[in-house]
Length: 183
Image 1 (spheres, rainbow, N blue to C red):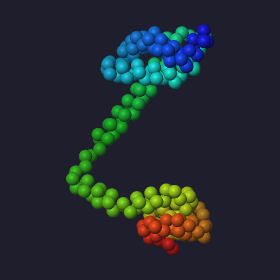
Image 2 (image 1 turned 135 degrees about the vertical axis):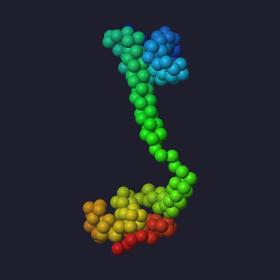
Image 3 (image 1 turned 180 degrees about the vertical axis):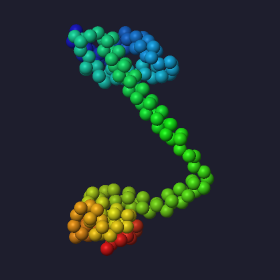
Image 4 (image 1 turned 60 degrees about the horizontal axis):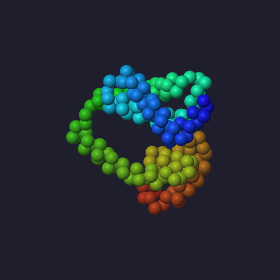
């Protein structure tokens, strides 16, 4: 019996035979639980994809193919229901938000435009070592002094100055990075 498991786990012809043997059972199983025909069709496909990925877990001595397959179908259906619940909760949260008016959008667009140099600086800083980037962000973007940045990071002021110098030297071609609070 072990050979049967290995066959449908690795052999496309055996898997096709397995699919044909069980597609109606899986469809009935899901149709008893879901009333949308499109969802049933999608779930049947998802179940057999999951079967392909987990065929190696089937153990004939633990039960029939159908019992194992129904377990896969139950897990697939549960995962889909969790996903649908999360989506529904997100939709509810978004739908409760106040729609933005024209003035709100204009103000946000102005703010986004005004922050464009900072976004460019963040992009330029992405490749810096973490320590240098942290000091540079605090000094240049957040306008802290080097001493304040050092305190915030739990490092010495001298260490912060060295990191700031290295970061600025690396990014000397980015104008926004050279501005900021250096003291």
